[in-house]
Image (cartoon, rainbow, N blue to C red):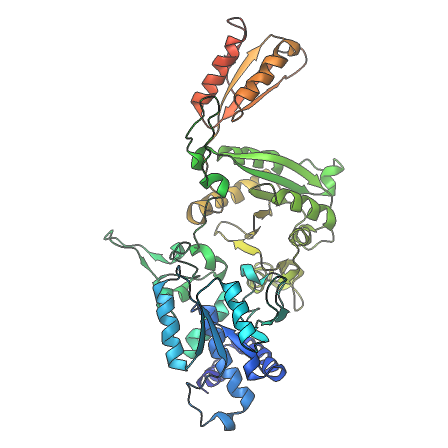
Length: 511
């Protein structure tokens, strides 16, 4: 068959290994289940296109070349499931139906929601195992092996993942080596295709067009860094930002929530040395200032021990309540470097080798990377995104809403933060919110005199941060007002002045 022949004759040793392993999984499945008991989930994307041709080759090899040599290429006996979504690209639908015609796919089309449609199909057909084009790093890959029973709440079947360990580079190496058709969107700069509402061409493939006309993009297979495969997926604002607040609070109405609403972050330092007082945490205070400068509020900073459970508990608590969590310290090959394991445990996933990250490390540390597996390349499975920038010695690691920083001091944090800001502009790693504004007042009033009026003021202006402190017990009290709206701050100060005699408060420089 042409697929097996193309791979056998190519010089790509890595691709040959990936192909052999995938074919083994397919043949093992066909030995365990009858052809009527297996199905193939096809969505028109590059991964499922690879899987289609692996299945053609696997079935050919399973039956034996002699018995298949007289069969037509259109005789593909494995039932194919296609979920036809109204939000799918027209090119995806066209490619799917053209492919079905070319290779004689027996399409079972689901037009209802996928779960109930699949349940109805499994009730009507004796399907016990479904081949899926899931790869490590996909959102649905968390916790999966090459053979994984379906999740709780879904109809029972065996999920078979022949290309689970394939990288972006492996997928394109296969498609180009075998010279098989793929969806035309990939030649227009799309690198990962979802729905028409959340997918755009990958900006990293954009070609500068001096004429100023429509943007032109290079094909997907020219993306040099496969870790940025999903850079074309549009990030949506959290519901807390996109929603609308109908309340009217002391003149606060119809606020531009996209800019003025608060996104919160927390910072977690991992290190016994900080808790012992041996080392002073330089990163935490600097990170708080940087987040504040882009309009984010910091809800909490914490320092935890070099202990997997301690890290996991803090990450689990913070990631469920904050929009973003930053964690630093405890990253590396030492026995005390437990951050990766703690993050993985917080999300209920295992640590798994990341081949692309391992290749990056081998390039970086060369001969120091010994053995078949570099332990530093074990990352939380299925939830990890590498944030690569040309100015970064080591890419940052993002696991859902947790960013793992590798900085060890404020200067290194400056570099990583600047790279994050640049990535934010192109990939919305962080949303740039409206900056905070502030005013500071000083007063000679006693704490007792100001306590109750200040408490009432906080209730009247819940959208502002109103606080106070002293540089020493002998110096005047300093009040600060922080928020996103200068007019609101002025209104709060005016309301405060009305509660006391004129001249009780004096504005001072915020520095």
